[in-house]
Length: 308
Image 1 (cartoon, rainbow, N blue to C red):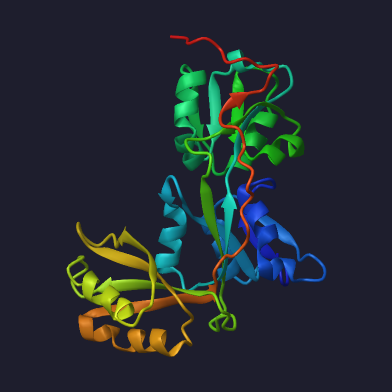
Image 2 (tube, one colour; image 1 turned 180 degrees about the horizontal axis):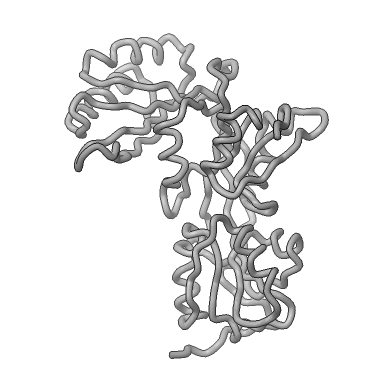
């Protein structure tokens, strides 16, 4: 089914990705909200754009604690898609379960692998005997737990997922670090980037001649010698052989800026090539100043004693 002007996102409803989508400036600029269509995985959401079922997909790219999201990096490395916008979203986790489940009852905790990793310390302290069960998303974990009767299962997800799926929050503010932030990107088939602004970012996939890092310094030097800030560099395996990488590079500035354009035009002289992923406005949203209390169980659910 095709949804004109629709936005695909990593679902189900209630994910952090859906919350990021709603904060995307291009989405908020519509007089009437375009349709939002949840998909079960990052590849499925991006396939919806490739096949023309949706105009744009919003997917997570990287997290300040756990780094890049492998599924997104793999897809951007291979797909002919372009980034058209970004959102940075503070990530606050809550532990939730069906009514009648107490914290001391929990034996299984469902969530996305990144969330499980970020909350690993809290789980070791408060639920040392619980088994971590990976899910496609935090909201998928909440949905899975909601299908069960009160008992041994709980989910780690965004607090709004509890209300959406009829769960009760047992503890909130989970996470290794209270200031964790995830960067989400909007992806479409559009070849033409958004118009220049005063705050732009250009993303590239750079491949060196031999696939190794030896020439990377020369590539980055093309930008720094022109006073272009290189804000991010991620190495990602090509899958061809050990030690062969692609490099995801973010630089400040729009591809139409003369300095950025000149740097790109001389890149081949270093023995490297670049694929343009997009130029788009850098996220400038204000992060909430208030920090959530970290890892405290709800008053009516004291932390359980350590179990074998």
